[in-house]
Image (cartoon, rainbow, N blue to C red; front, side):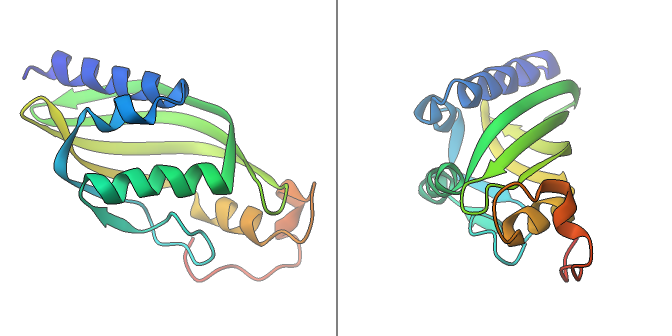
Length: 152
């Protein structure tokens, strides 16, 4: 596929996620997709997954844990079979009520017209603090006086 076709595929994937159509998004992935998020203690959907069923499980757990307030891809940068997507997101953690926001970077590899791998880079410290918040509404203030998690 051309770089532009790869970018088009990812635009469709982000559109599907934005509309809550996870089945459509999963149909754009290879059966043996490699899915990699930073491992963060206390965040059950973090870490590596392999295969379509594990990625489907990722989206299920993600939806159980946090609510997207904003999720916006801003820029697509492609070369050969690789596409980097830069964006911004705001989520609310359901268990704590805390909100966190930040910029993110997603790196994809496309093979045979499907998403073959995904790797996320973002501010894991903000997410970890939101998951550790002791009650609703702590948000950005949750980190004051708290110890930093081992991974950030």
